[in-house]
Image (cartoon, rainbow, N blue to C red):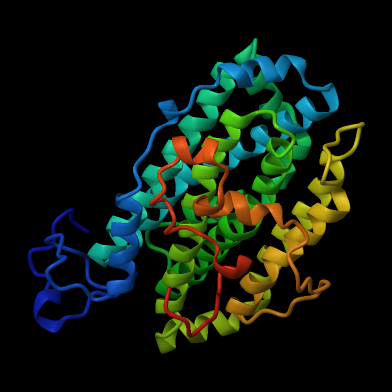
Length: 357
C-alpha cells in the first residue's frame, strides 16, 4: 500500500470503482466515472457556511425564560444532535476513504465529513452561547443514557469497520462497508430527520429562532447527505459482486435499520417523558414521522417494512423548515436562499433504487 500509486491506469481503462479497486495515483476528475457523485460534491461545495452567521443572544434569554418542560426538550434534542454529528464528523472520511478508489467519491466523502464538522462546531457553538454553564451541558450529554442508547446501532456499525484488520478478506471488507453505508443512510435519512422535527416544533412556538435558523442549515445539508448515501449505494449495487453480497446479508442490514427505527421510537417516548412537552408535537406524532421518513429508506434498500406505513406527512410544518424557499422572511434573511439543493422532495426524499439522484 502506498499514498501514491504511479501504476494506476484508470485514466486509460476509464474504470475507477468506488471501493476496493486499484489504489489511486493522481486525483483524477478529468475522467469522471460517476457524474452524479461529482455533481453532489459541487452542490455541497457551493453551500459553505459557518456557525457564526446567526446571533444567539435571544436564544440565550429563551433558555432562561421558556417553561422548563420545553427547555429540557431542547436540551435533550441538542445533546443527541451534538453527539450524532460528532460521530459522523469523525467517521465518514476517516473510515471510508482508506477503502475508496475513486476520486469523485473521495472528494464527496471529504466534503461530507467537512460539513459534519461544521455541524458539530455549530452545536458546540450553540451550547457555548446559550447555556449558563456549557460544560454542564457537555457532562449531561456524556451521562445521558437515553441519548447514548439512541446512537448505539450507528456507533456499533462504525466501530466494526474501525476495528477491521487491514488484512481482512476482501469479502469481509465488503460486508462491513455495506453495514456502514446502510447505517449512515439510516442515520442521516431517518434519525436526523426525526430529531429536526423536535427542534422545529419548538421553534414553531416563536422561541429559539436562532437555533432554529442554524439547524435549518444543518437539515438542508443532511437531506443532501442522504442523497449522497443513496447515490453511493445505488452505484455499488449495480455491480454484480456487490449486489450479491448485499443480497446475502440483507437480514443483517435489516437488523441495522430496524435498530435505528426502534431506537427512534423508544427515544420519542423518553423525550416526552418526565413532563417534557411542546405544543404541536408528542411522542405518538414523532413516532409516526419517524415511520414516514423510514419507509422510503426501506423501499430503496429492498428491505421488508414491518411497521405501519404512514402515507401522509404527519408534521406538515417540516416542509417549511426543510425547504428554505418556504421559510418565513426572518429566516430567509439569515439563510442563503440558494440553499435548496438539500431539499427533501415530496417529503419522502424521492428514493428509488433506479432513480437518478
